[in-house]
Image 1: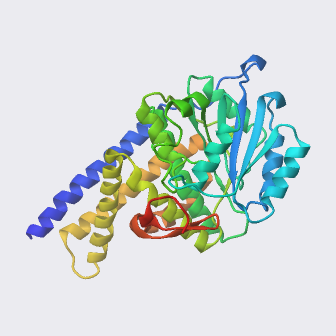
Image 2: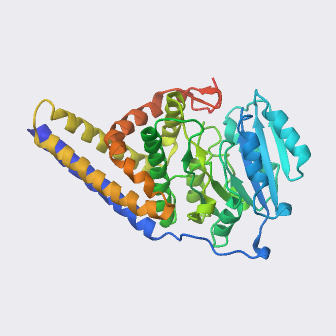
Image 3: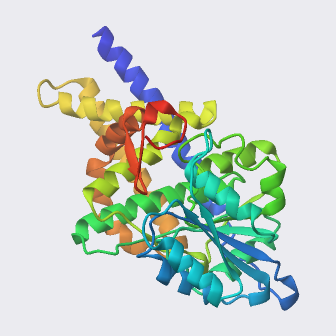
Length: 392
């Protein structure tokens, strides 16, 4: 009975913490500005688009077309694609594009450096090879619309120097509709959390598929030097670094023209490695954020263990776990419904119930594997416990 009492008190505390967090996120969404101001011709700053590409020959022709056809003055737009040790036709495709189009530049990296993760090194090389006032980032498997650059630039006119964007999933290969919807909803939920944090002036996460910041901000915080050795995190770890510096002023881009569709995982292996890679960054977050993630993990652990315990013995803790799960689901749905209107993603809400049924187990599995498991990324295999960011 004493153990039951302890579990009930702990679960009540964690439930209160989680619900307070959801209230915080809901308030953040209310504070967002939906669209940037209109620009005049005099407002177009110089922009450098940086893309790191490794073995992306199958994606680059479409990506290059998307970037070349941007509705932005050609003389103020510089496109730099960094070939990161590719073993396919990436180098040849980039060199041909650079010969054909004066505002496309190809940079080639042929080795690795100790204590400098490959993608961060590639992005840093692209930044150093360009001189645009604003730096925009995406990936080779993304499909930015023709007004992407102009829309993202508009948010800098609102006083921001760091703009976080949304990347809805598209699937380059057919997968079951239910699975595609669940993956897209999971991806959207991360964007919703990022947007809510931005409403409070500090996004909690972001994605490198759609990101922009001023060059002087990158230089002022020392670039990737403080986080260069970690395997991933050129996006959210840098965001946290910029936020902690006190120099960053954030905005979240809600204009649909700013959205950049990104290729979602279409095989179990892609999904497995992607989610472990995402979770592997959690130990590099600031202590308060790591503690919050640990509390969320423990909350989901108690939900799962308490619910499963009802299969053997009815108990107060078991019924409390089910009640907490239902309360969690109801408030999460309300938050996502509120946010989906801003993102024009209401269609994804029909996948909420099946996603919610597996969500606690999903959190437990990948939260654990992110600390210990190896993963593959762009043809490289990384040892999580090495912490050097170098392939093994």
